[in-house]
Length: 251
Image (spheres, rainbow, N blue to C red):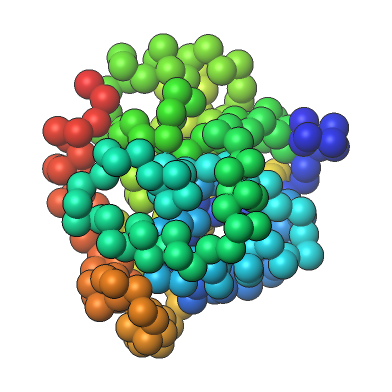
């Protein structure tokens, strides 16, 4: 059930936006066209080149929105000191874009969410895994290490993100779907998201990549040029990222 005890009929799950406002705007147009009645933002609105603008766009929506926190959001507002030095300048810049009210709202986002969706059943939303917001697993991760994590949820469907690649698999009796990334996909360029109710649809929204890259480069984001090139115009391939994650993921 929703927090107010009302079942949802048509829900969009948007994950890993990473301050890519042009991608978010394009997805929200498709969300409206799909008749979505409720939005779940599954973490990592931040960091990215347009953090404040992306938050404002989400906060100002006229449909109900529920947020869960991602490791990126968490590290921006309360750094743990565990990130590689290469990320620190960008994270500090993102933090400097936020108001005190933004920080207060982000700090209140829960790590997980449960919701009843018509035609789907009870759905569990988390950023990475039900245990925390940093664990890595992909469509290639064996079932064995995942069964203790997902097998006891007691839900029809679990939705995650974090690795920026969509998949749809079953772990034990639980269907587990990665919504992909709106703003920093790995694989074919575009903005990836999930539509729930009455079925489960993995969605990809096309948008004007050249125009989006120009908007990113016009920001003062410390790695704007790299973000435009590597995260908008020509993201890393899924094959390359799967190879990297093979050494970092759950065994």
